[in-house]
Amino acid sequence: MLSLNPKTLSPSPFNLRSFLIPKKPSISSPSLCVNSTTCCQPNQITERGILFDTGDTFFRHESATGRDLGVLSAALYKQSKGQLRVLDAMCGCGIRSLRYLIESKADFVLANDANESHRRVILDNLAQVERLEGEKKRWVVTHCEANRILTDCYLQRDYFDYIDLDSFGSDSSFFLRAAFSSLKLDGLVYVTSTDGYSSGGHRPFHSLSAFGAYVRPMPYANELGLRILIGGAVREASVLGYRVTPLFSYYSYHGPVFRVLLRMNRGKLPEKRDYGFICYCNRCGNSQAVSWDELGQIRCPCNNSTKDAASLVVSGPLWTGPLHSGAYIMEMLNLAEQWGWVGKDAGTGLEKLLKRMLEESDPRLPFGYIKLDEVASRAQTNTPSISTIMSSLHKEGYAASRSHIAHNAIKTDCPMAGCIRITKKIHGC
Image 1: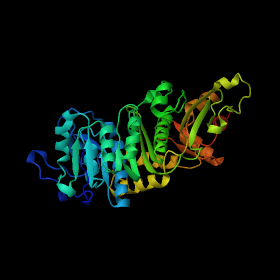
Image 2: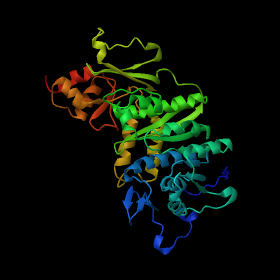
Image 3: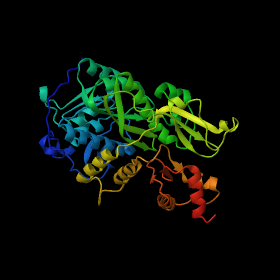
Image 4: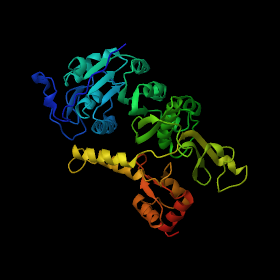
């Protein structure tokens, strides 16, 4: 068993000199900058001004935004609680662990990767931060299967504030129970899925076994990917007597990648309106949430006959509540601005994402999104611009925002029939 109980040590967030080990002249410490990810020598990458080596590990440049979100959330936890112990269960080359140490000011990071052949790369990268010894130890590298390291920590009562599960496919669902068991109350878990087939409804029995949700094809498949990931976590946490709520949910098309930050506390299952079923009508394009006690009574307002009922598809159970906490996204945006990650000369990617998530946090907005091409097809018109149809929706009193998941889609509380009517009106039909 491992012994991982260092006391708190709080270096300045970006004052690298205070805790970096002096390097050889050939590997000089780079100054921090606002560029996201740049390439240096083969296998050497600079991300947010931090130089590291990827070696032969699996590494995606495109995942830098997901790492940015993780670092921001971990830093907010440190600022709020005064301490931060991180368990990076599948650390790869160790870049996330390194960034948690340097940028989030983590007091201690346990960097674990099951592949022992990655050890030299991980050690070399983390060596940029002085390890120290005894109770002041800053980081440790282990090579265990994720469930093993999480269970060992639980058995030793060695609990963590923040656990990063950056797994492949739908594997994170297999680690959730062990992760919740080794997490402190009010702690954070950053979970991952790259299973686009399940979210698209192409493997309903696989999604049922992995996430506890039978998923059918629906036009907002990528949002379903986030919702089944949250729903699976809700189910696993409830078995242990815990309740989890999403602070933000992030989709990226490369992979695809679904990432969700969850906060865990004691409690029961969420209200039935937040964990249930989603119904979509292929005939009229309308969506509706279905609670557990409404099963067997599902029908769409556009039809009454049994024959027309065949146009309905139902997915679930899954998370039907908010994908983000608006207040938390605002805290992340403010911190990113303080660090120079958003604003003038900082690039627009992260800022655009956080502001779009903030728009999506409007409590009036339901699950799902409406693709404007589908609206135009049903209205038999050209596709309206997003700004035009959103302006029209707002004028009629509807809530509407862009979606960070689909670039040509909107989230709105206006039903499909209303969107069709407004689109026809825009085109003078």
